[in-house]
Length: 295
Ligand code: FAD
Image (cartoon, rainbow, N blue to C red; front, side, top):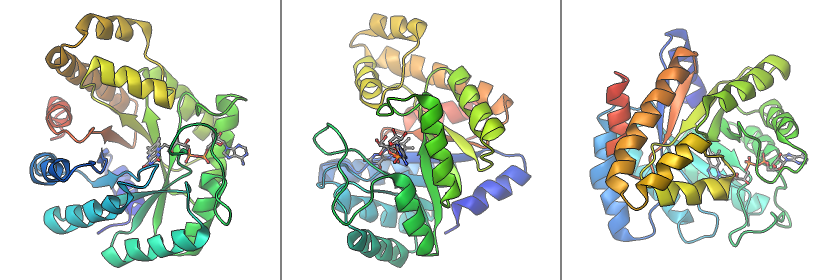
């Protein structure tokens, strides 16, 4: 298993994009089997550089994060990135989780603040962490991990001051020890380019700023996601989605085409990699990579 900072360095040197896939632990056993026996094998044939596994806000799927990380490493010999959040955790609990992650041989953590399970304002757990930057500092002191953090090309939804303030806090996470940034999904590349120009050009953040891409699978689902995470759907895209209604097959085909165009433009602009929100499905992501000549 590799340190992800080394993967970005090596591929950057070779002028090749780092390809990564994100999965979320399914709630049911059948969902876990589907992911591990069907979709991850199909995606692993596209030879990703690493796979990440999310950490649930509540509790029910949290134990599964590490089980899935373990399976991906052992069954498919792929480098993994375990997400970890501050939500409902004390420092001692986080230390114990880091020990477990280390014990599995996983060398990479995406350090996040997380959201409260039931919505509303985030509350720091007594004895825990207030911001992701505090978690980054803590993990950095625990040596032995390459650390990633979240970045938001349109600004974080809860930051009332605005995106420039949010990006200032992103710099704090990098200054605290983060090696790379994976962004929230976005549909207008101009947002990513403004983010990159400001964060790298003005704030002097020189770690990889990796765009997060979601191939749309359903009009209803993507409208719900974007509402939750605060990403905007540009008006021409919204019109298309409105026209698809419940026709998911048409939305999938369109999503592949849209993500292909988006990624092609980003690759031309020299992004360090592409991080795919697979939504636990393989077909669309594999197809996008084939269209780009990267599978
Ligand atoms: P932070 O960087 O702590 O920022 C949170 C808010 O506080 C922002 O508005 C920021 O501007 C503000 N802020 C930061 N520092 C300060 C400061 N010093 N003073 C004042 N304000 C400050 N969630 C999960 O629950 N599980 C996951 O697995 C998961 N994976 C994700 C993966 C990616 C790639 C992304 C982009 C997001 C993911 N999330 C996940 C969602 C994330 O947890 C939420 O968006 C959360 O609300 C913010 O997390 P953060 O790490 O960016 O927090």
